[in-house]
Length: 240
Ligand code: 5RP
Image (cartoon, rainbow, N blue to C red):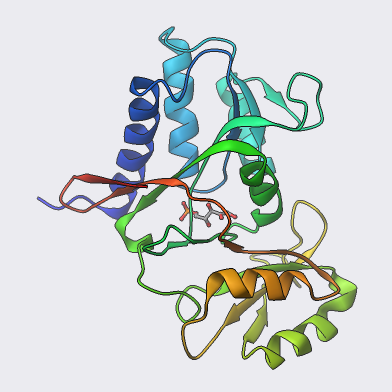
């Protein structure tokens, strides 16, 4: 019997934490970056279970959003900032979800508008793991899930024009049950961008990051995460 998308998320998350513990890639004393969203949170939950059962001790977490901070606090996982002396700007591992993942493990992230902290955490971690259900696995990027670009609100029109020149159509992300734009945890806004044809994510990450007024780009192409992708048949593909 096929399992649902939500079940796949939990399966990918549990498998990732348990496998990484088994492989000694998660161990006591580690500094771990924790992602945001409906697949990352089950990974946080599993981590807390493995702390509670005594497998892991002295785990220091750095979170990527208010959502994850609140969840860690509810679960009793100690939360630090990257600047705290105990962390000193460096993490051992980061684990997170993704909106899309291509065959080279390039990612689109930012569906939950947390891309800035997610990228800071990921790019400052010695290793990186992604948890996802099978719907996130794609052959190319740019045309389906809109690429989130975090921008300074006052530069919205000028950034939009530059993105249009690169072939992107942009939509300002609107709040739900709040009039006006989504305001990120960092006080910025999000443009969601799509192209008519697939784009090269590595080239676009570089080009878009150079636009004045862009804070961060949702393409993550400079990391080669280990991806745990759960399928509807109950299997979990581990892709390096
Ligand atoms: C948040 C993110 C999330 O990791 C991404 O949106 C995937 O979320 P979910 O697991 O809920 O589908 O990048 O900014």
